[in-house]
Image (cartoon, rainbow over all chains, first blue to last red; front, top):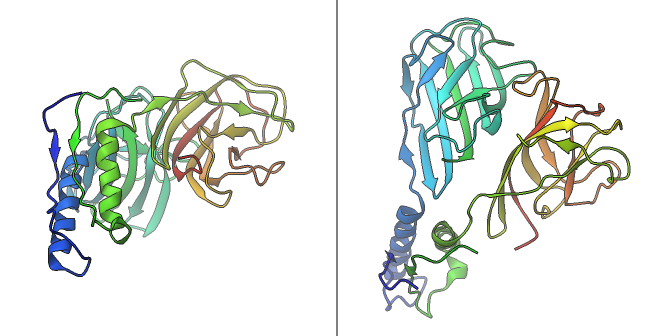
Length: 167
Length: 167
C-alpha cells in the first residue's frame, strides 16, 4: 500500500446539516475536487475535412471533451465557414487517439445542409485503418461521399457526440 | 481487480448525508473508479443465428470487443467481424457482456452491416433494447436488425452505455 496521499478532497468535519451554507459549499468543493480529479470538460477544437480538403474553416461552438482514465467522452458542434470537396467523405479529428483502428463505432453524428435545410444523421465510425478521425456512416458508405454528396459550405453545421477508448 | 498503486485520501464525516447529494456521490464513485477500477477490458462476444441460440457465428480474430464497467454502468464498444456463418436465417442474437437492467432500456447504437469488412455497405443501424423475438423478456441478449443469413465479412458495430442489473 502506498503511503503518499494521492488525492485530497476538501470536506470540513464541521458540516452538519443540509440546510447550512457550509454544507452546500463543502459539497460543491467535494464535487469540484472529484471532477478535477476524474475528468473535467475542456474545450476542444476539431479539424474538419472533406476528401482532399483538410482543416476546413469553421466556427467552433463549444466543442468539448473530457478524459477519465482511458475513457474519452466528446461533444462537437461546428458551423462551417469554408468549403470542402464534393462527393468525398467528411470527417473530424477525435480529441484523442483511439486505442483501436476502425471500422469501430464511437458515437452518433448529424449534418445540417444549410443550402437545403436537410438533416442527415448516422452512427460515427473511425474508418478502416484510422484511429484519429470519425465519419458519419450511411447505408452504403460515409456521408459526403454518399446520400449527401455536396461540398461542405458556409451555413452547414456538424454536431456529434460519443465516447471511445483512448490509446 | 486493479492493482493498488495509489490511493485517494477521501475523508467523509459521519454526518455527511449522501442521499441528499447524489451528484457528490456519483462524482466520488467516478473518481474512485478512475483511480482504481473501471478499466477497459476484452470480453468474449457471442453471436448466434437460428431459433435455439445454440449455433454461433464464427467471429474473426480481427474483431474488437471492449467493455468498461463502473458500478452498474456498462460501456461497450465492439466491432464483431464474421468469419463464417451458420447457414441459418433470422436476425442473429448478440449476447451482452452484462445483462441489461430491463428489456425496455435503450442500450445504444447497433450497426448491422453486410457485404464489406471495412466500410458501410448494406448497413442498417438503430437504437436497440434487450430481448429477442423468441425471448422477449431476456435481458442478456438482443436481436440484430437484418434477418439475413450471415457470411464472412459481415459485421456488427456496438456502441452502448447502459445500466446493468449486476453490480
